[in-house]
Image: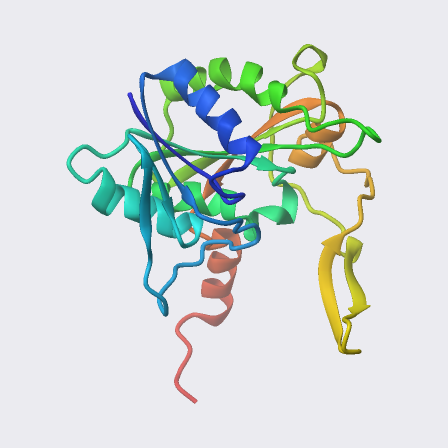
Length: 258
């Protein structure tokens, strides 16, 4: 199995090292193509107005001055074009990518691009920060990730689906189980704009999110993470809401031009 590893936290991120460790537990043929700098929140963006620089750090290890989408495209269309990957692992992200996070996430986007190219793709994220003062438990994904991913690969999934895995804020031995979960809904009122003033008296802002626990329904990714369980969520690239589509067809039919 040939594995491509990418991320959105950048080539020097500890989560990338965790993803490489997971990948090497699954295969001896591991390639890394990751952003030169952090691209958190880049979503499925593609660099079209600037040239991309590809830099080879060492054998099978490259950086790109672009987004996770750029990295996957560069890997599959150029770096690995003669023998494309059979599996793409994107992550391990510093922080969870659950609920509405998936629409912002560059980590999810790396897997999205692989999915769009017809390659089995998995996004991985590590939750942290619910235990005050504790370090990010990278070992959780490093230990629990390989056997889980091995099972998923053996099972297989449709070409137009990517898998989103979130590891809980827990040591490997503290994980309570695995939930096959739906995407939850976060209270976006937790978003915060931090206004500051620079040395010349001009205001600037940081966008962030408050860490507030909600009470999500069982069966969602939010519920799983809050209860120290791994959340596994299949995501579909086709965003059509088919139930609403059929209702609109019945009620509106073919609308005449105005």
